[in-house]
Image (cartoon, rainbow, N blue to C red; front, side, top):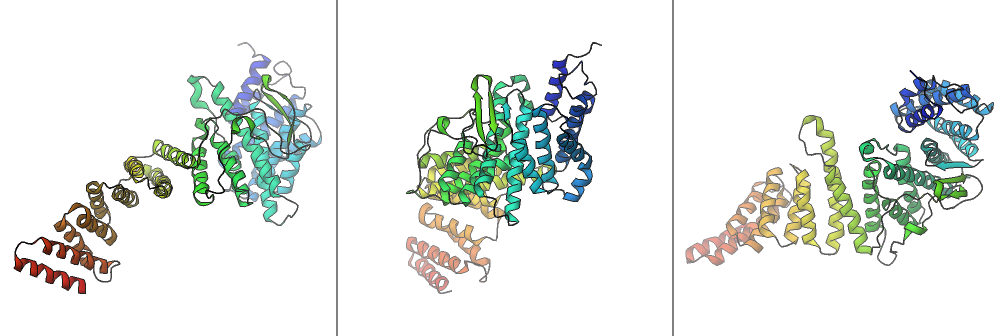
Length: 502
C-alpha cells in the first residue's frame, strides 16, 4: 500500500482533532515522519497531540462540575507535565504549536482549579499574534476555549476576593470566546456539503457558558441595554444544528429581560447590528485582516474593544418593542414544539418531563406578554398548539381554559375545564370557574349548580368553600327566576337563602 502524502496525513490529523475523534490520534501520529509531515520537530508534535487527546478524552468523560481537582490531577499529571516541558524547553519550533500547547495548559489548569495558572497561560499564549483561520478550525476552537476558561477562572478569582479582577475583563473574554465560536459553527454550516451536514460539530458546554454569561454579567452590572443588545446579536446569528439548544435558552432569557427589566420609556429599538456590531470585545485586538483569505490576527494584550471581521452569517430585520418580545417568545415556542418528546414510554420519562417544563415556561411568558396587550385570541391559539404536550398536565390545560374564557370561547372553555376537573377532582377553583361560566355566559344553570355542589361536597375546610355556597345560592336564585309555578319558585328561593346564609 502506498504511503500517504504529507498533506493527506496532516489533513487526517486535523480532521480528527476538529471532529474530536481522539481515539484515532495515536494511530495517525504513528505515521508521522520526515516524509509524511512538514513539521520540523516531529517528536515534540507527537507529544503535543498525545497530550491533547488525553486531556480532551478526560474532559469528554468528566464534564465541568462532575469531578474534583484531586481526581483531575491524578488523571492529567502526565499530559500536563509533557505540555509544560514542551513550552518551557521551546521544543515545538513553530509559534502556532507553542500557542496550542499554552491554550491546552490553560484548559488543564482550570480543571485542576489552579486559576492563576489558567489565566497566566492564556495571557502567555496571547503575547504574540494568534491567527484565527477558517483553514485551521481546531486552533481557532482552542483560542475560543482559552478565552472562555480564562473568563471562568477570573470569575473564580473574583469570588475569592481578588480585587484586581474587573467585570469588564471577564465580560470581554466571554464575548471573545462566544464570537469566535459562533463564527466557527456558522462558517462550518455554510461550507458543509449537504451529504455530511449531520456531522456538524457542537459548540461544546464551555462556549455555551461563554455565550450565555456575557449578557447576563452586563445586565448584573447595570448595563441593561448593552446586555439586551448582546442577546439580540447572538439571536441574529443564522441558526445551525449546533446552536439549536443555545438559541432556545437565549430567546427565553432575552424575553424575560424585556418583560421584567425593561420599561417602555427605557426601551431602545434594535440597531442594524449586522454591519456595525463589535464582535471580539476582549482583552484582545485585531492587527491584520484579510477577508478574502478568511483570516484574522488577534493580539490579546495590545488593545481592547476591537472588531472581529470574520462575521457569522446573520438574519436581518428591524423590530419595534411589541414585535421583538413576541417574536422571541414565538421563536422559543416553535423550538420547544419542534423538539418535543411525545412518547409515553418509561425510558422517555426524563425527556418528556423536560419537554413539559420547557413548554410551561414558554407559555407562561407568552401569557404575560399577550395579556398585557389583551391579545387573548392569539394566546388561545398558542396554547391550543401546545396541547400536544399536555397529556395529563394540569397547568397547561388550565392555562388553556383561562385563555379561552378571556377570548370569549365559552363552550370550548367549559369542555377544557371538565378535563381539568378530571385531572384534579379536588381543585375547587376549577369547579368555581366552570359554575361561573355556566351561570354568566352559557345559561346552563343546572350544569352550574352541579359544579357548585361539587365544591360544597369537598367540605367546609376546603379553600373557596364559601364561594361554593355563594355559587350554589346564585344557581338556585337563577332557577327560581325562571320557574313558572309559584310553589316551585318559593322553594328554590328558600334553598337559595339557606345556602347563602351558610
